[in-house]
Image (cartoon, rainbow, N blue to C red; front, side, top):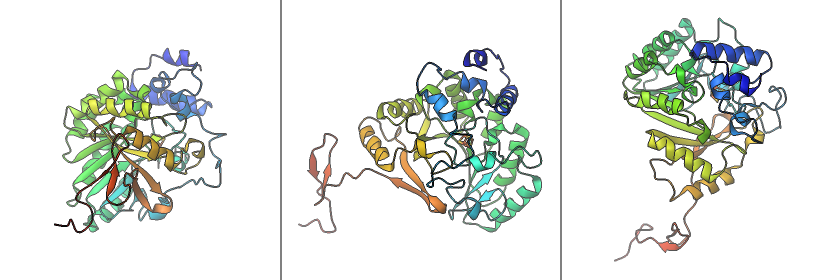
Length: 348
Ligand code: SF4
């Protein structure tokens, strides 16, 4: 089905959009909602929407020896099914293996490639019991990231049940829901869902815009609906070669997100997951871009650039080095200026 036909599907209902996506993917088409596909420009070489969707080869083979099906070693750090515990203060709950899009750069492709076994596509009650028992016994865990897959493809009643269960644990103070739904299926952010998310104090939503083309009135409206009801919205972007690896592109994206009270939180270098090597800019290019953005974006609009170390080593924030030795630092215009309070002894 061509893009023109997709624009003509006229499917407004979010469940219908998801059904259409599954049928299109099963028929060998792209795994994205008609809404998201309608943002693509077929006449643009290297279109940033289509580039995020097109798998390399059949999408199952590793593209290079640097790639891995589980690049962050999450399976090794899973003490109970569907829970990843890497940091002392937080844990990751994989609520579902379904998404509203299948991104070609996804670090968890191993989960959604696992298939759609109805008995396992969503966390079960007994799995939730085991997760709750594990979390309750570890009082240092304060925060749970509910992700997947994408938890916002669940029915609101299921989502509410999962969040309620976790939020009732006395040690859990913060819940972060990770979702690309505002970007790829904004109609899903309906009044019932907003009511649900807004009813949990300590809940944040972390979404995932990668390109200014995704900043439609529908997507920004979904974010506004959440923010205006007191749900803080963060954004994480993956740095993708050929999609958004240019300072002007990211400046537009981050400035516009901040203007809509969506805080640019992280800019991640792409993980060495299956099929991702072709998106890798290299860490050095990421640092160059962050340096170029200095002075063009305030701290409100500037994310932290980070890599996630393979094998469960955790996130490492990275900054360009502005030190020029002997207590001198590089200014915005490139001048080297000594800083008076440098070193352990400031003299008399
Ligand atoms: S929405 Fe997130 S979890 Fe789903 S395919 Fe995209 S990056 Fe992966």
